[in-house]
Amino acid sequence: MKITRHRLLEGPGMSLTQDMLNGELKKLSEGLEDTKHSNVMKLLRVALSGQLQGPPVAEMMLSLGPKEVRERIQKVLSS
Image 1 (cartoon, one colour):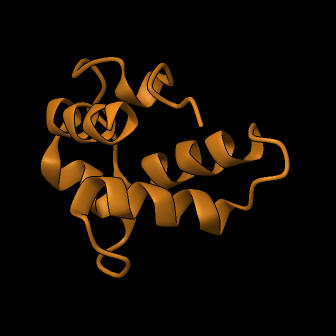
Image 2 (cartoon, rainbow, N blue to C red):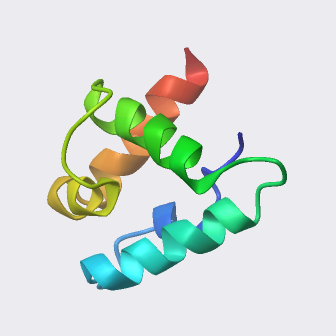
């Protein structure tokens, strides 16, 4: 799954709310053929936290910040 170039991960210039981020994550999921939104969220949760369960993905992304989110996703994609 190639999501690293999505605008959510491009830089710190955007100020997003949790609702805005949830909308963007939904759009991202819709752009992936044959992939359910829930599966995308599960993959992102594991990439961001290493856990199968936890707080909402958007909440984690806002707490971690764009740089840390990029680094964690890149780490998973390169392993």
